[in-house]
Image (tube, rainbow, N blue to C red; front, side, top):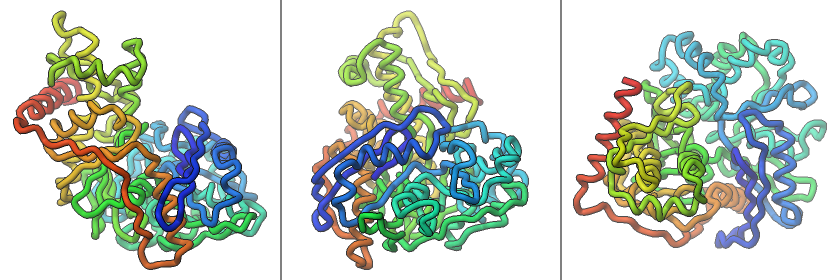
Length: 461
């Protein structure tokens, strides 16, 4: 299962081969705070007629969301999601309280920003102290769904998590493999609520009432990495609601600038990651602005030349996480009478989204992460023009796997792994992929990035 920001996707796979046998989907409510019960209802709807007939289940969920529970296991408020930016000031205060970003990078591999759970705990303690006082336990979205699958409150089921999702909280250290309860107390006004036990990658959390094995689960980015079976030298650019760039690493990372989050992965290794708030929404919002269907954006963008005749879109439509601009708005720069045509705007949207991700890729490279090949997944990757422009802007060969639910596939692969009890996950072949080479003349990509950087400096310095 992939319990994402927008929906719950379920895939049922053959445990030996990875062949997808069935699929289901149900929508989640919109917004940046959501009742966890809505996720549970969506899971049951998406998995109707499927859950009772599987041997093992795992959930990969949206990272960082704050699920605060009382002593009876009931949410004290709606969950604050990763894309809720009201905790930006709390994050900045936390960074200062510990002595600066370097201290956080050393402690947990990640410098708090608005998205990170530890910042949301500080916000809750400062703005809703009466609810913070009632908080007995803190879970992440995937932890909560895993717990519900195993019986939930009153069942005696243990609340658990995995190292991948735990590494996105800001109070679990990938390098130490342990919680930093001192940082939890720092964030939560001295309170130290109960935290889920961190399972080994192939360890089971329990069983459903129907007897299916429930695996540890993980975060959505870790699920995608597992579903794609990435290797060292691969960088994944995921263009969903958010945009992420991540890679497999044998060693933990700690970026004092805060741009690269030093996460763990779902296999016992590490997953340095850069996250932006804006990706596929840049294209869907531009299509809406142009009064066209999203599928029509691809052919329209192809009518424009590289560089969109000087139009540059800074795609910070909902604030931004990398760069850390939580209060920012999008900007359309370089408008002239001669270039204000729909094809140029369509092309500028694609280029702006990908320039933001190219900056993310540069941040990974600065942490000595190899990027011999880039894989592009997510809703925005379905438009062929995205892969083509990406190869141009990234200056790296691009692989675009066939559209698929790779987060859910990764969760299914983890479930098969827990079922098998083997040291490594089962080998599932990757579906067919489209290869996009780097253009022979890379000057267009360089010009696009230079124009983007100049526009950003004019607005944000």
